[in-house]
Each structure stands twice: as C-alpha cells, then as structure tokens.
Length: 108
View: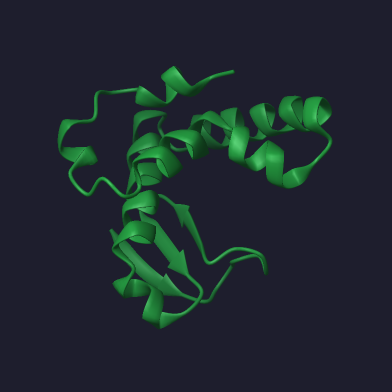
C-alpha cells in the first residue's frame, strides 16, 4: 500500500484507491484508521478482479443502479464494493478473515 496526497481526488471525496495506491486529500487523513481500512478493502477487491475488471464492474454497476435510483449518493452507496467496504471499515481485523470475493454477498 502506497499513500499519495491530493492528486486525483474529486471534490466530494476524501480518498480514492487505484491499486496499489491510496490517494488521500489531506495528510491528516493518513491517521484515520477507519478510512484507511475502507480503502484497503478496495485494494483487496481490485486485486481479486485483476484491477481492470474491478473498474469495469464498478462502472457498469454504477450505471445500472443510477438508472434505478437517479441519485448519485444512493447509487454510490448501493455498489457492492462500497457496501462491503462501508459495512466493514470499522472492523480492523476484517481483512485477516475476509473470504475471497466477499463483495458478491452485497449485490442487489
């Protein structure tokens, strides 16, 4: 995991993960263990799907859910990858016992 500050993060976000990098908006966020755990879960998801398939899946699922919800925030929180990460970001031992492809449990 490599942490980079302030580069390609959209305004409404504090972090972004593109394997093997975690981009964070401000240096103080480097100490936010919940945020980092959330992003580390995304690292694992991206690695499982060989990076490119993660982004293809993420994009397609976003488009389908956006048609359904017609709202960015609702759509974003409904994506299976985000659901897994948000539900487990406070569990700092989650990645130690996480089963492969656990995001599949969160498909709608």
